[in-house]
Length: 135
Length: 135
Length: 135
Length: 135
Image (cartoon, rainbow over the protein chains, first blue to last red):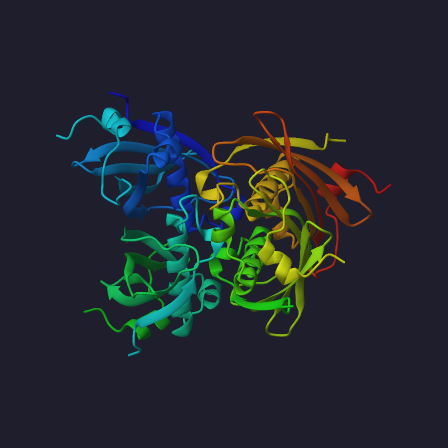
């Protein structure tokens, strides 16, 4: 089974900072999404191909703890761990570490599922292979 | 004590939609933030004035349940309820309803606090007056 | 022929402002796009229907003069004028006026065209009717 | 005098793509701004320090020609050339090249200036040194 931890490095861009000179809350969700997509791509999960077969990956719940704020010029790593949560739920545990001092800036749990063409949860075979069987 | 429920109406803008033709997850946080800021402004809480006194309002935790997706052209209401959660925490319960059918699209709990110039939690007097005493 | 001037009112949202406490340059393009789309929608031009027929509307050139900066709390109007520029080019002249004092904050010329399924410029019949014949 | 051409590499993130599966127009301005800021930073021009002295760098005009569209997964380079345009104007010529085939996707001319605390154009000494004297 493929190793299911993935690190992706980013640098804060000035347009992502708000009037308080820190990265705006919503922008962190952009970072987290990009890290998940790059992770899945590396595992051979292609959104385009799934889409052609009528399968879409959707986020159903997000919990985010904001611990400290990234600011202009910061570089940081998004660490993503991916696991199965029951038969039809996918769970991503994601953390953001500032590069300067390895400080934990944010931790998040993102839950999703895959929907087939009839809008019903259905985990596609590629994900089944990557994630392994339900416990 | 001021009534602490606030409704704000929005319309989805096409640039807020992603390749799946639905509003991108992060954009919902923009909607929720704008509703909170307009709510606080209506209660006489001015970010600028707080800022001059060295007080900043920060979000510490967000929980969002995505129930259905807004799409291009949808109009919707963000409903915000505001309450105190202990001595130093502010809690916003927020829901998004699609106007067409009043369907609940998203519900969220956003927790925040106010930090004084020394980075310590301190609820400013304006918020104290609006929120009432700790239970 | 339909009147081809359209005004749309907006209010600046705090997340649209950057570290200098003014609306970030790129955000103005969002405002301008939303105004164009609402304008076309009001004229009966539906992106979805065009898309089903394999026609997409694309922007080919933008010129923007930034004259003064919108800031947190400002309300403003985007005024859009729509005209034909030769056989296959559409031209939008757009201006942003601050509501407080009717000051001109920005003026822009946005040029676009419609592409058919073979990637060739082709103005669809709905637009032909709205815009009138080439001079 | 420092060489005044700067290349910065990016990868399109899915949240930057719109319903047509291409990068939204406004997002290109984000890319261009980030490239300019990184460029200036590399030349020793620090926004923070300028700001403390009451000097702000502002964009006054943007011209963009959109030649082809970036899409999900594309990597690309923003090339920025920086020059003086008269005594008080700064000019950035910027181009975006897709990495796959080195195709020119966009070319832009961005004009700006520096404003002192009284809102008057004034080029700070750091920029003077970098840009050289007016012709």
